[in-house]
Amino acid sequence: MRFSANLGFLFTDPALPDAIRAAARAGFNAVECHFPYAVPVAEVAAALAETGLPMLSLNTSPGDRARGEFGLAALPGREPQARAGIAQALDYAAATGTGAVHVMAGISHGAAGAEAAFRANLAHACDLAAARGITILIEPLNPRDVPGYHLASLDHALRIVAALDRPNLKILFDCYHMQITGGDLLTRFRAARDRIGHIQFAGVPDRAEPDRGEVDFRWLLSEFAAEGWTRPFGAEYRPRGDIAAGLGWLSDWRGG
Ligand SMILES: O=C(O)C(=O)[C@H](O)CO
Ligand SMILES: [Mg+2]
Image (tube, rainbow, N blue to C red; front, side):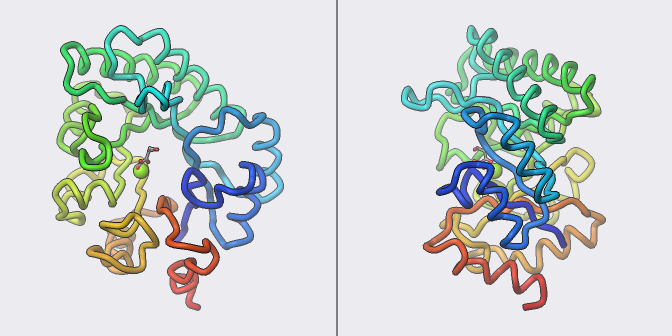
């Protein structure tokens, strides 16, 4: 069982290169991040090379968070900024050997033209990414945490992936969001298995360490592995307190 530290939520105190080093020391096998763009790419590439950890994924720019933006790809009229963000993310991914870019849909509130904009931007992203061997991810986010987010269900993500029919377009199956939007995690994972490119997890409902709450991750992740999932699972949770003190779940997996 291998685990990736999501550096958007874990090890957020040090700058990104030192967060990568901290994740390696803590025993993670990989890292992933949200928005690395303020950090010189050479520093991130150097930390990855030094630790030997791969960076699995990063997100396109969210846009202006102060104005409530959380992604641009499904915002009609914002195509230039969305595509600039996609180009920026692909450049950063290529320079760091990152295998996947999560193209963030954004808060569309179901506006007219949002779905068409999202699909066109995704097709564009897939074309650019394919030339660089990079996977494009889309991630349904639950509407309680992100009201109005354009991509709020697994079914919607499956419809998009089927319609665009690109081999490098996959779904980011975040067990936290999936539990809140319907549960039935193993059955829904099995049904979507061929379309899934990455898995994340966190305790539900508090989005903290995955060692308590309504999902038994020791059981669930073992079942995913039994289904043939071999990639690292992305730990994307907000620690209840001290990060190191909360890593018992990781040492339990490692056998103490
Ligand atoms: O919020 C999540 O679950 C994510 O993984 C996104 O990348 C947003 O940061
Ligand atoms: Mg997630």
